[in-house]
Image (cartoon, rainbow, N blue to C red):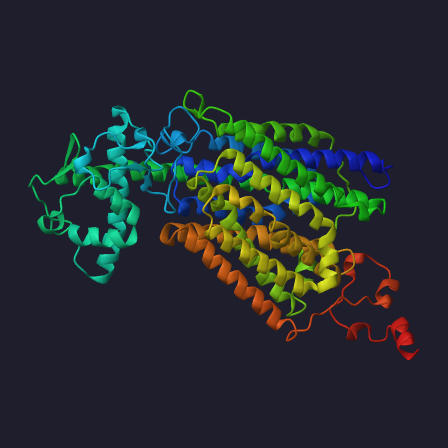
Length: 616
C-alpha cells in the first residue's frame, strides 16, 4: 500500500483486528505456561529467570532496531514473515531439549495413573515432605514402621515424585543424594568463605536451620542418633567405616551415599548445565529474529490509519487481541488438564501448548502475506524514538515514571515467572492456571478505555501510586496463599496494578510528547516495563527464589512496591510536572512535523497568537 492508493478503511480494520486476535491467541496458548515447561525440564529458578530475562533484554534492544531497519529499507513484510517464522521455529525448538530427568513429566502431573497423589513441592524446588494419614499407598514402602521417625511421611521431590514401586527406588535414592549434594555445596561454600571447619555434623546442624524439609527427609531415612558424633571429619577426609543409614530393607552406607553424591554431581549437574545452555541458545536466537513482529504490525496499522486521517481508530484491535489471549489460554489449559501426562512416547502433555501456539502463529504467517503495510515514499531519517526519549528527558518529573515502569516491570516478572510454581506446589491444576490467565486478561480490557479517564480524574501521579499500591497488595496476598483456587479473586487486582498504570502512561504521553509523537513516548515506557524492567526482574527474582524462597520474594516485592508508592506521592508536589506547550508560530512555519519541537519556550517567545491572547 503506497501513498495515494485508495484505502478501504473497514476492510483494513477488520483484517488487522482478525490478525491481532490470531496473533495474541497464539501467545496466550504458550507464553504463560513456558515457566511450567522450564520447571519440568529440571531447571532451577535462577536458570529460568535467566532464560526469561535474557529473552526480554534481547527483545528490548533488537525489536526497535529491526523495526527501524525494516522501515528504512522498505522490507517490512519480509522481516515480518521472518519474525513469525522464527517465533514458531524458536519455540518449537524448545520441545527438542531433553529434560534433566524424564520422570519430571510425571511428578508435575497429579491426575495421571502414574502418580498416587497430588504433588506438593516446596518453595525451593528441592526435596520436600508431604504428610498424609488417609492413604497408605502414599507412604514410602521400604521403611519399616519402627525405623521411621514419622510413620506417615513420604518423600516427594520434583525429581522423583511419589512412586511406590521398586523400579523407582534407585531413582529416589539418586535424586535424594543430589538434593543433599546441592545443599552440602552451598554449606561448604559459606564455610570456606568464613574460614570455618567443614564437617558432616555441622552440615546437618546447618541443614536443620536452612532447609527443614530436606533435614526431615534425612531423618525419614533414619539417620542413627549418634550420626554426628561418629562422623566428625573434614570434607576431604576419607572414612572407610561402614556407618549405615537404614531405610527398612534398604541398607545405605554413609560412605557409599557420600561417594554417590559426588559421582552424581558430575553427571547430573553436567546434564542440567547442558539443558540450560541449549534452552538459552534457542531462546536468544529465536528472540533475536522474532522480536520485531508485533512492532512492525503496529507501526504499519498506525501509519495506514494516519494516511487517511483516522488515527483515532487505532487501538481498537487491542481489546480483541486481549480477549483472544485470555480465552484461548483458558481453552488450551482445559485440553491439557484432561490429557494424559504422556500423550506420545516420551512426549509430555505440555507439548499441547507448543502445538497450539504453532497452529495460531502458522495462520498468522499466512495472513501476513496480505497484511496492509503503508509505504511512504519519503523515509524520515530522524528516529521517532529519539524524539520520544527527548520528550521524556525534558522534565525531571518524568523520571518518576521511568523508575516506576522499571520497578513495576521487575515485580510483574516475579508474578509471571513464579506464581504458577507456587500454585503447582499447592496442588493447582492446569485448569487453574488457565483460569488465572483468563481472569487477569479480561480484567485488563476495561482499563484500555477507562485508564486515561482515571488518570485525568486523579492525576497521573495519583494513578501511578494507586497501581503500585495494588501491586503491593497483590504480591502480599500471594505470599499467604494456602489454597490454590484462592488466587482467582486476587487476580482481579490486575486491572489496577497493570491496567491503571498503562492508562497513566497514555495520559502522560499526551501531555509531554511533541505533536504526533504520543505513541513513541508510550512505546518507550512500555519497553522499559516489558524490556528492561521485566528482564532485570526475571534474573534478580530467580536468584532470590533459590536463595530465600518464593514467600520472601513476594513479601519483599510487596514492601518495595508500597515504599515506592509512598515516595511517588511524597514527591509529586516537590517536582512540578512539565506539560507540552504548542506554539502556533511553529505550525505556521510549515515544513515537516518532525521538525516541531517544544524544547524551549524562549525560541517562540514572539508567538503573535500567544502574545495576543495574553494581552487580551
